[in-house]
Image (tube, rainbow, N blue to C red; front, side, top):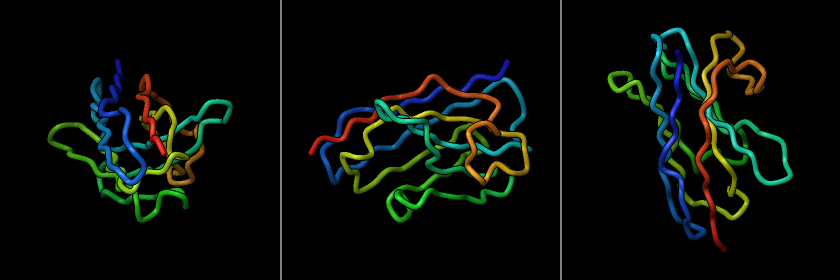
Length: 125
């Protein structure tokens, strides 16, 4: 049974940093891509970043480029999202997800098969 467990969310002031973690278990993820999505109140869930597990190729949505960095530690089966220069508009529940498709880099949520429970990130102004 695949499990994705996020941690690291919290309350931070604008300009601050947080690092989210996603611990994956239940199968071998070498053929997967791992993504981070976020959902703010009243908005749809949106793509933030994704990384291929085997080669470490990363993609980002435009609004976080240069501020967020996705990485993975294959020895720990963990994916990270380092978030710097946080803004109030980054406030959302952040979800970790896993995709088996070759089109994972498009950021389409329907291409992701497994999801975590989410972790709240709140950025105060």
